[in-house]
Length: 122
Image 1 (cartoon, rainbow, N blue to C red):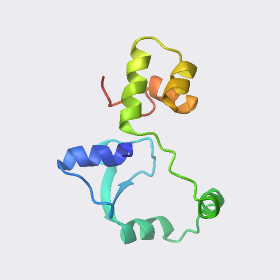
Image 2 (tube, one colour):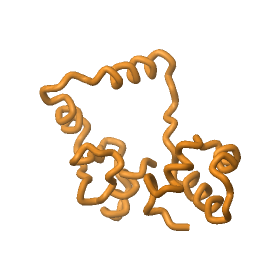
Image 3 (cartoon, rainbow, N blue to C red):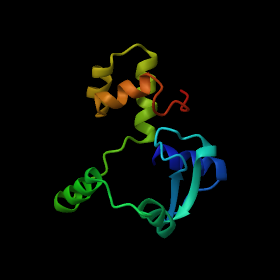
């Protein structure tokens, strides 16, 4: 589960349906404060992002690649974050943790610096 969906789920006290989209109000995907999150339907979410805009070139390229290669979702998940934080707590190096958990080194570094998943406590 993505961090913003997890936070909204805990806030509401229930699981989110796959049709509920959690949107970042300020469009900063690193700002997962509950006051910055809102639930939208799939169509509301699409309309919001497409309102007067055409997709950015980067987004079009990602969609094109995903449709051609059927690339799986590579986002980090909560159990992996917990394991990373446990290993950080005992002083392991980022590259060692990345190798042992299968996470990207960048993810481990961002978790270590508190840029991502800072709310997870172990």
